[in-house]
Image (tube, rainbow, N blue to C red; front, side, top):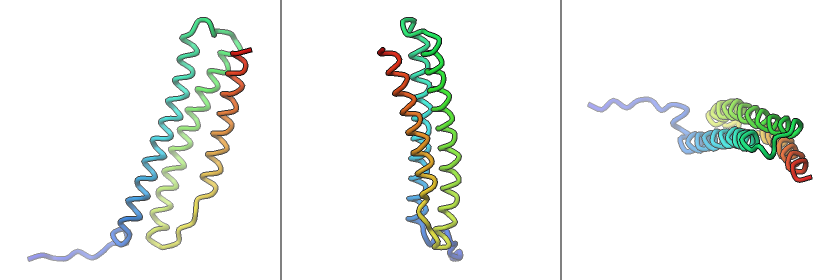
Length: 124
């Protein structure tokens, strides 16, 4: 005898929830890339004896720290965004997450500018 289970709010919008999950996983991959780039730049700099100067060491460490912080912030915001979107999908009150995108884009722009200063300093 098959007993049919009642339909949940989540099961009404399966496609949207799966898309939300894919987006969340993409943000996690992006966060890991941010962290990896920070480690890469710092380790390459510190491993190269020709580049070792006090100010360039500080630039490299700053890039590493800021990339790790950006990765952690991305994970936190992505998780909060994922949970909020899940609720919004079920209640059909979805709103575009402008703050999240603008905030992370601003942080990433600052780190890219920091990279630029680092490379300009090395090549001069």
